[in-house]
Image (cartoon, rainbow, N blue to C red):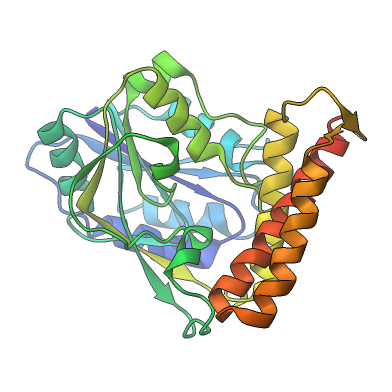
Length: 303
């Protein structure tokens, strides 16, 4: 089979229905053999019935249940169960544009790349607050900074899971997603995508950003709050610390001693920022403090 689209989902049956409706509208080159694989990551809602209802009229749609909780577990199950030579990933709150499949496959071929990411536009449920400027879009898996094609050369440029693609041989060479990382149920951990692309780039594969590969990502109102951002940063930094650790010989509660003065400086910058800086910069400094708090808790847990 030429291509597989993998959608991992957890308790989002209504939103998944919208995603699948968008996928049914995809344009595909004549003769392309492709499928859509929904990986149900232990949902307790109507996810299965939503997929089975669509399967009656759409035979290219398949359903797989993955009981091990965690997005990385679900993605790895999708890799194992899929049949395509090229694997495209999107999420259950994303609406790909009709040309997404065609432009992504064409882009990989044109650039002779092994992996790619693409443009992710927001669908705001409510208008974002004034402090939520583009510097925070990465927290929401939104990527609108560029719309051209360009090479991805560092893990910091890694695509987001809402819009990324791989040739199958990539996983055969570098392995699958790290199941210690990534969202698990309601825990807002992240970092599995960046770590995967770090391995891909380290193995010498070519990775590109495709500006014409476009999807639209729903951003619910509850995610447009400072409370959500604090929680995302704290839990993600905790998860990375637990899975990766941090170098340093002299430690207190498994936290390297040099972290403590860095944390105190971050607190000072946060306080000064709230007194003197624009709202987005002030909150960005606050986010750094929550990074350190998550880092320290993760290291303490990993002791």
